[in-house]
Image 1 (cartoon, rainbow, N blue to C red):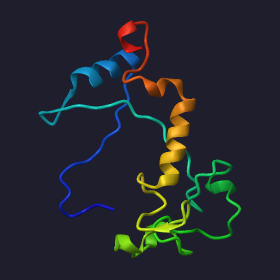
Image 2 (image 1 turned 135 degrees about the horizontal axis):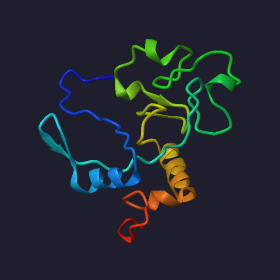
Image 3 (image 1 turned 60 degrees about the vertical axis):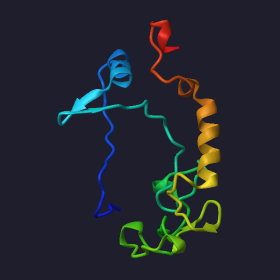
Image 4 (image 1 turned 60 degrees about the horizontal axis):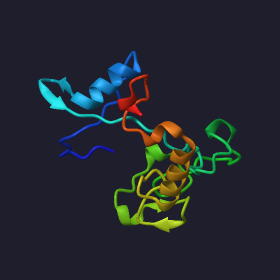
Length: 137
């Protein structure tokens, strides 16, 4: 959901080589005449977009739930039709608590899964994409 006063946005760029990506990370890029700096995109743990669980055993096409569960309020409706705007009414199905949605990157369950995911991915410990250049290790 976009805030009417939004002043920033995110973009994911794809480069043809690791060297080009590392150059963009190290020296920045010029976008719309503005100097911007990026970082390496780290893969996040998978979440079913039907039941919104991070258990990793299934995705939405194989979800055992009969109906959609809202990732914002956890009621039985599609997340795109949710009218809940008050963050105090958000409910996370992963950690079973109010105050944040299932898609929140501040969820303790997400943070735990993300840390475990990063530990399994050897490249995530490096700032740059590893190449033959030892400075990228």
